[in-house]
Structure formats: C-alpha cells, structure tokens
Length: 147
Image 1 (cartoon, rainbow, N blue to C red):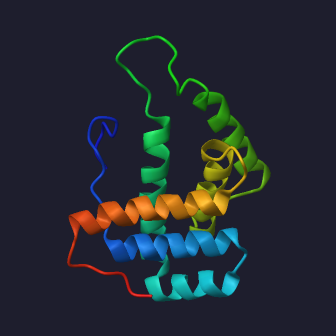
Image 2: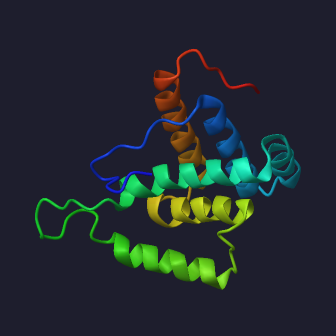
C-alpha cells in the first residue's frame, strides 16, 4: 500500500475479488453463516483476509483522509471522535481484527457508524460493492465475476 494514500489512489481490485469480498461481508451482516462459510472455503482463509483488508482500505481511507491544504477544521473533522467510538465498540464486542469475520464486522461497524445516517447498512454495502465493481470493471474489462 502506498505511504501517502491521500494523494496516491489505490489500484482497482479484480472484479471477482470485489464480488467475493462483498458476498462475504454481506453474509456476515445478514448472519448467513452458510454463505459466509462457502465463500471462505472457496476463497481460502488467507486470500479472503487479504481481500477484506483491501476492501477496508478502500472504504476507510477516502472517508478518513483529511484535507491537509490548510489547518482549519474541514468536513472530516468529526471523524476522530467517530473513529474513537468505533474502536471502543470493537473492543467492547471483542472483535479480533486478525480473522476474516473480525475484518468483515469492522467494515460493517464502520459503515454503520460512519457512512450511514438512516441505518441502511445493507444498502450502503451494496453501493460500496457497486462502486468497487465499476472501478474494477473499468480497470479489468475482460474479467467478469462468477456467481
């Protein structure tokens, strides 16, 4: 990952990787253990963990990147407190960030606490998946995810 992700955009993920990662995240969000397990089995634990960390970076970094052009508070000034609350919530729920369900739950909690105002976490996850898929398809037009 580049050192300065604010000015250096992250490379698009492969479409199939976006599909697998968001299928897993949405299954965890819906408490669909069978689907989550099937994705984990098909993808492999190390590969799925890597994909989830890549998705987390693409979800968190654009939201938390501060405008460093001036020292004045900007639209993102509220994020420090919100991220602090999120970290406390993670600690309270005993989420382990070293395993795939923990990374998926962190993405879900971040989406719920930071990216949604109306509580429609599933809808925001679908929007994030669509945005990632669009970027992936533009970067890799010959690739198509398998259902």
